[in-house]
Length: 461
Image 1 (cartoon, one colour):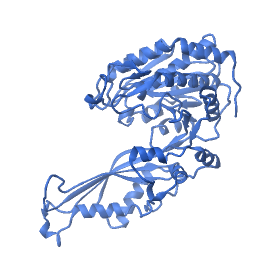
Image 2 (image 1 turned 120 degrees about the vertical axis):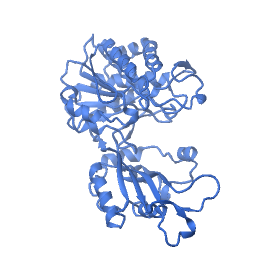
Image 3 (image 1 turned 90 degrees about the vertical axis):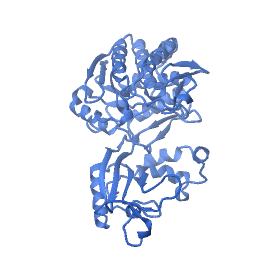
Image 4 (image 1 turned 60 degrees about the vertical axis):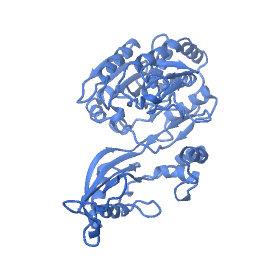
């Protein structure tokens, strides 16, 4: 699907974006000056108020909703069409530590070398402002009236797992009715091509624990006393075979394979082995898989050990038999796996293999979510990307991580979700010296503006 360029309308949009770029950057800096660290609830309420004022300044009808955590803000503006595009963002940020590694204070935004440095500039305050800047440009080009409705939902707990967003969406579906959504962040590949991801794997995070004795014991008794460390190692060993395949019976029975179009997009993805070698210091991928096999494997669930805690791990020697052991695991899930079902299958597996004494505690869960590769919104975003970047969009049918996309996609009728944005591979999000390149910001605003401008014309998804 290739949509026609709108000529003068597009020129007006781009000219408006360029003329108001400094103003948009000032809005990013104003948000970044306000600390909003959700892990410590530091400044989050103050930042929520700034977001309310910012949305209102851009002409949206704004409501702030209290939750058991930080407020959720919804802003809405109508358009000529009955179709509505939803933008999801968050105003909370990661802690800035270690502070000594920042070249400038994290909450004192500064522009240098063509980039804006501050905690939250990329993740996710700059992304929020980019969408507002795009909205303003489209309104200007259409003499004050948008071609489609736009709804913003901005939460303050994304960096701590979005514990209240799913419940909020279920309770306010009437307020969030839409025909498609732009997710929190996106950007460009290392070679400059824009990327569009269409889905994220789900998550099941658990902690296993086992106790074999009342107390640790002298290792001279290891020939007759049970070790919790060995007990845990054997339980963990039962979960995967040597080829990395999960051996929990029925675990993959609901997994849906990629479509033919998914496979076509996967085949076009860049080979990342050279970059992965540089970043991780590896010589080859797990089990000698090729880059093509790795790309396809994103449609496979995983079982990862985050960490194991048992016995003595201090300096020197301590000949001890551990009485307790624990391990934290995460399973990445693919459509249509259900976290609660997978948790039940894990418990059943441990019991069946003689590990009924190993306790399982749920730490977190997210459902997988995926937009169809054939959805018209994907075609619109790809066409707009080609026009702005003069490069074909790189489309990821699925990414390896997890996201609360499912909290919106399911309750809102299976809406398509995409993620154009301002980022590039070295933005340092979550790390010291987080920043956005101003050129990337401007290009992303142009891209998003074209999506807003064309969304009313692509018909029902």
